[in-house]
Image (cartoon, rainbow, N blue to C red; front, side):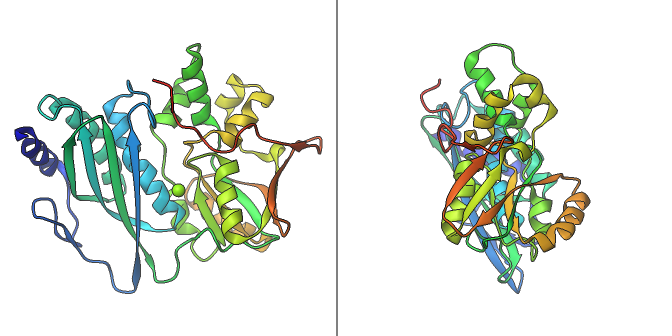
Length: 321
Ligand SMILES: [Mg+2]
């Protein structure tokens, strides 16, 4: 597989380093130095063509998203991103130099934005898939976990939700589509600054990769609490509202995925501090409901009726090629 070494050289030539990378791409393994007094936070995600993105997605967008979904996990842990590795499985390593260059355009643009060094990885031949592992730090004991929420805490969501699922719904319908919604699907913004600002304020957090119902459900399970969410308060972009009626929006916002906003919990007494912190990050935040002692996740319409989402959890692009 002679193309593999050429590909690695291609990647190494473009990867920037950091002072805490003692040895980067080129040896059997990287050597990295974690700052004293910090915990190392590690996450890994795989994107498979036709499952996690439509096969015809631009390689630049795939590169961006492959890193973004990992940085979003670090944001959800309140970690500062530092390093990443990249494992690429490509259908034909010899023919894919142009693809890799375009992929790296998106990947490295986001990496540079957050001062993340690409320190190693692997290339293999096979059906297109991308695995990224990202590493970050938090001061000892300050990671934002899923299991710290308490009954009575408020449930917050950053930005707006449902846009990415709206883009996917339009793509599947093969009808009119919105470039703004599609941008949310292809180029998610990991909420790194928000995660850092929530250290010591939020009690629990998660990023919205699989939809509010499924992801908040993980927090509830880990924290042994329940929640009541007010559908009338779900943060909704103007674009989503322009393209989808309210009854269509709720399933997108609750069961759709790929928004990569943060969902977190905090006592009501922290609301002012949170608003200040979010404003400093230039990100909006909305209280969408409250945690209760009784287990379970319940949604209430503006009319006060119970609402049951059609399906909890994002099904990605499974079966759609
Ligand atoms: Mg996550």
